Image (cartoon, rainbow over all chains, first blue to last red; front, side, top):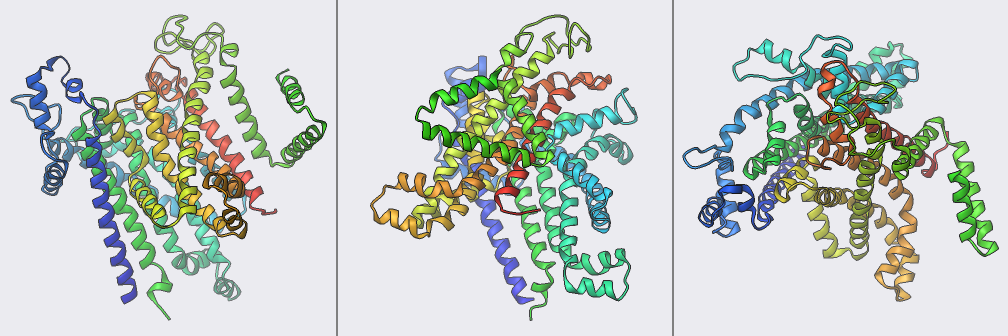
Length: 324
Length: 301
């Protein structure tokens, strides 16, 4: 157990360093702002005075290290700065815009995970149980094809099938959610985006589950179980699965991390008021503080999920847990 | 007709008879490999060939120009407007064909740049070792900790959106992955005796990179090129779909999906065409890469 603890602590330390480096990268990005950026943002309102005020506002009169210190200290206190969309007498704090959007994205991602994880593990087990049959081959083919589809293609196919007069018309094709919507309303509105994201990630997780199980099935103790007369599903669930958890759990965490990229496009398709949509809108209007905040939250989540994948891979590895 | 033309130009260029025979046997080998390829790989190659033809001969094949307005907007599929018209009344079929040139061309160019940058730096890191390797690898590690699409969005918000900026941003971000692979595969080649011999012979660094190491890591790099192309292609399409990539009136599959998305809600399938064109090419390339990996890894059925 001690050895495991040491490895886990090492990984956590490495994760913290990565987070720090990434925060520096995201901050440094703003230093590369081309000259005349203030003029571009202010547009018609650009006079020498307003440009100077804007440059002071975003801190161009201070050295970069000082600005980074202020920025990161603010982030730790939940202050991501002020949006460029603020004008005199009307401040828009990035954190205030971000919080409800982040909750919406979390809700959508959580809903997707609740559908996708049991589904892909279940299908993977079935594919391993009925390996090399038409069922296995069919699922394999579908997953190979769906991996190479762009997210918006899957999204529009889902809309055609479930939310348009062409086929079934049972779900809303736009996922506009108010802040005070009830839980049932939210789930109904989020159904299509969640289904889309499920389709995006389920294939990969399922294939890995199948591969991990089949990998274990070749070992002698599984043959032993077979020889003593255990049923095929018993062999898979009771004997193979416990030793296959490590790769499966790792892949699940990695796919949830992949959702971060998918969520940007999917939220945009369904105009869902989440962080992904917010980030794209901010990129279009070049609202750099908002983009930075979104990038930081997305990157931090991505790193954390990768870290969790790493740690889970270690602690679910029986060989590491019970050293000889 | 194009096939005979190409064959003629090949024989015309290969003037000495010896090189001509070698050329032919190479072609023959390629043909034998193609015949033996599984159906999925043949299907993939067929798709790629069709896309390449559409991209090269777009102005000849397409009945209309990519920005040409030929009728009212949102026309349904008919004999007059083969695949209907888009929101401004431009011919969708023509724009699809021009899209092969614009979207695939830009993705291809980006992948080439990414390989030139990531490949040469990866080779450099593997040969130079020591500090050069450490610094380059740590920079790449840090850049890879952020998802590509998120990073690309951040950079595009700072530099502004245009095709050239998107190509450069994507090439730099993607080159980190190429760097990783090139460095990893060349590390096992660098320690070979013949590389040492070349070094003792006094060969310069570029010569060793190009003549000693590159030929030996070509197979994994070619397969990786296919995969990275798919990734770049999908990401660029996503950026264009989000309105941050290729700008109108250039025909581009990603933005075509977005421009025509209203039609979906009334049950028309037009926006699925450009999206399907993207998906089909990715599937095709994946099939070919799958076969190529299988072939070069020496696995037999």
